[in-house]
Image (cartoon, rainbow, N blue to C red; front, side):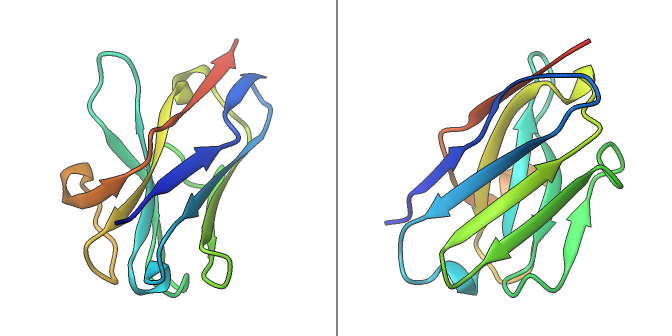
Length: 124
């Protein structure tokens, strides 16, 4: 059984920064790609950042490229998302998710394990 727990969300002003963290249970964390996926009210889920099993290859959606940084620590079973220059349109629930393979996917339905999510609200 895989459990993913996110932390670090909150309320921040536009232009500010936040760091989200995800802690995973289980001994196979390092074998799988991971992602941060967000969902804003009335919008579809969006993979905003993803990382392959080793951390050596990353993906960013155009909406966050240059502002967000994804990283993982396989020794600690953790993943993080550093978010800077936040905009009101970044407001969403952010989920930590695990792929079923060592390489990442760019579509949300391809991820098989999800955390409960953490709310990020950016005020203007």
